[in-house]
Image 1: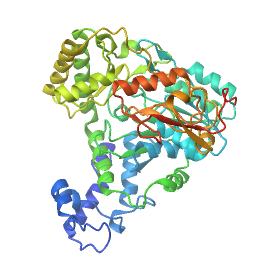
Image 2: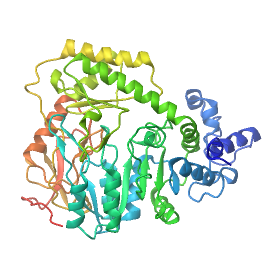
Image 3: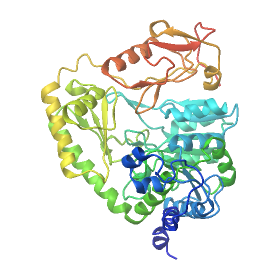
Image 4: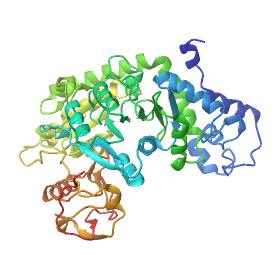
Length: 493
């Protein structure tokens, strides 16, 4: 059977269809019994949705130990992505990132990673006791964003930490920036280290033409893929991809340490159907996505002030490649923080974009968008500049602050702690996260030194309206710090 013919199958979806035709009487969970027991929820979500929200049973297989339809669906996914194995993940890409790190690292192991990782990666360090070796990425000082890791930076980190267990790479970043994945993988493997890739924002790389190299094509060992972002599946559904040297049976044991035993068949079927759709039609889908993004970029740049950036940033090192489907826009020249433009688009123009940070916005473009929606976004940005634009003289120019690591994340997170007002925390070691979400890259992570610059940044982000998360104090007025206090130097590995 040819690959295209095989990819026309969707085993989990087909099994659910068979179950629906059988009209089985349910004396199992969930207790809503195909929606009959919760009329309001059924009216809201629909009977078809509720009838597919079922429990694991022999005809539907079991995600914890798949032997039939889920196993077949995973094999089809692996084939579609060019992986040796692929697992369905129902805890989002967060669970995939954490499983990769839990597979690669034990307590005390070092893992080389960029500091602008998603919080899920640092959470995994708290869970495993692994110690981060941060490669501080280059920063575009104009845009205020962290870039990729250059091979030279990675090579130096390997020389300094020859016993590290793994290297983790963001590819692409939220803003669309890619590292030299092939070279980094070669370097890591030549020193016996695993390569883990957070591809949360790169699902489309596997199915479109002209995109940056994928983790699997570059020879990486594992990749976490947010199918629910550009891939079209339901929120919280993702794939974990593995190369040929990863023990998939052990990886499943690692996943089963934390993943639910009651996997949602709504999520599983959405992964199955979306994989089929992309395998059969991905080239056309993502060609159209790039076309719309390029058009929007050109029109936004013609407004003046805004800078919608793209592949012209490529420098062969820290920006090795760029994802042209991303519509990232620098806003400071019009005198508005990204988060202010984000709020204005929603409140004044009924347009919801993905996120705004201090200096940038990201509008997520997909095949689900329409030409008139793109035009509406462009027009709204022009109007915002005209109505709300101002001098950019008092704008905070930086976004990424290089952290000072004083303690391992796990040590700090579980330490004796005290809560202090933000203004009194300079020189103390943080025991929790502080971040704007999205994008979910920590301003502070457990074990990092709080500095006056960071305090200023947090205050500015709050003042501009960033959605701040991570702290025990819901108002982000107080921060938990290690109780032993005092000044701390950087942790030496």
